Image 1 (tube, rainbow, N blue to C red):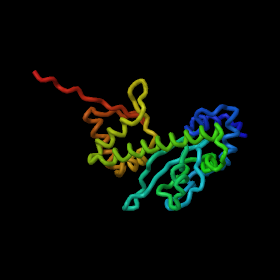
Image 2: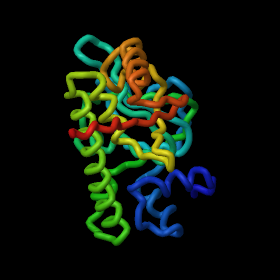
Image 3: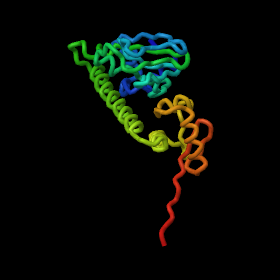
Image 4: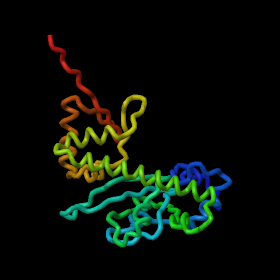
Amino acid sequence: MITNQEYLYSIRKCYLFDGIKDEQLTEAIKLLNGRIRKVEKDDFIVQLGGVLRNAGLLLKGKIESSFQNENYDQITMHTFGGGYLFGEAIVINSAKNSPVQVRAVEDSIVLFIDLSAIYQSEIASTLRMILAENLIKSLARKNLILNQKVRILSQKSLRDRILIYLGTLPKDKNSFVKIPFTQTALAEYLGVNRSALSRELGRMQNEGLLIVDKEKMKRIKKKQNKGT
């Protein structure tokens, strides 16, 4: 039974457990053959071309997913904290060669779960049905994220990639968005080198299109001059 409050908070953030009551969590994790494992910083949970047999729910720490382009450059897709479920599409499709790699950015705790257990029993319990429905929703959300990434990378100009990416992030009360990447990782995510990204961000600030405050950014929309 998971009693660590930090772990429980991360589990509650995960879409897979939506609608499952607190007293049912232990039963749900047991049904999924859940097991907790510590992953040290810079260790790979799965490497490119490797096999991932169980999906993982990040309970504590930070992980990143990435792939390599045709020039063998690493392209960071996302960086995630506690509550993130990963690997479900790979596991469900029984992929023998993972198209992405997942690495611990810092010391992390992962709950590995067997998603096939949802469908293995002939007994269609309420708990199994909730988990199955939540899994479908989780996959649909991941599909939206991938489509978003395709839209960003399809832009020819770096400026457009930056602006579209900023538009995908939630704004705070002052219209700033928090960038969940280092500048190096953001450059990888946008498919450019760090120097090119730094130059373009500098130009956008000089042109009054962007305000950068450490890890936060705010897009400034210039007012169009009205014709007389």
